[in-house]
Length: 373
Image (cartoon, rainbow, N blue to C red):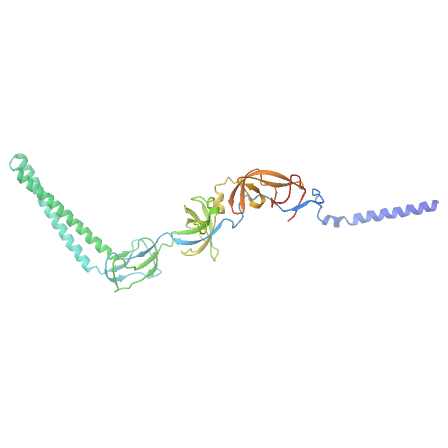
């Protein structure tokens, strides 16, 4: 009997030793395994949880547009005649007021000289009439001249005044005709077209040059109507030049007042900010404008954004499912739709909380959940 007890004691001691050795030897292996979620019930509903974003995701407020010059013109003479000088070619950069082309001005110059002579004659006649009327007024005052004599002098003076004014106007007209025979640059820019050469006959209105201001550029972009209310005049949008990817900045100057019924877009114009471009920008280039930063300018920096699918709402009132300690809690929130598929949470949530990404899942207060990705 004593022998049997001894054998059982030895076997028991051996089992204890094996158990202790196995635990100590497997400690590192168990630490390498992921810890079990102690808050998740065995039959917990698997959900995807997301945290509110403090700014809208990239690309959701982008729109494609085109660069264009704020000043572009087709230049024509205001006179008719043969071209005697053509001073620029396509690609030349010109300054405002620079002479670009000249028509034959011989006859026009003669006209100016004739008008100048007529103006001088008119001025001389006016001087004589002025002397006569002043003398007549003095004589009439002293009683040495009859009223009829004074009236005649006054009429002569007024006639001389009218003739002098007419001659002066004719001289100005002749000078303008001479200027009209010259084509000058209306603004700083680049010549984009030249349609005539020296010797060609041109008429008033004949297109001679095309000119574009390549410095004063703007972006014309069609913005979806869902975005337009988030954009303010004067806000700055970041732009990307296609296909190079060069960056630039543009300031919003115009918000269209009409929504295009076909595309459901609104025209927006934005001036390129000088010195903010990484490469040379040319009219006609395609660009992408990102209005995300511009849309955030009116916020207080505490705005929270969620995908619309995470919120069950009607108008501005709704609710989300907040994930807390392995369960969901229904939370009333106030929201504002900012884009298709996105809402801004105005009240009821903070940035540290997580919500179920799909508010339509069959849940109620206290439903056990397991967060999955």
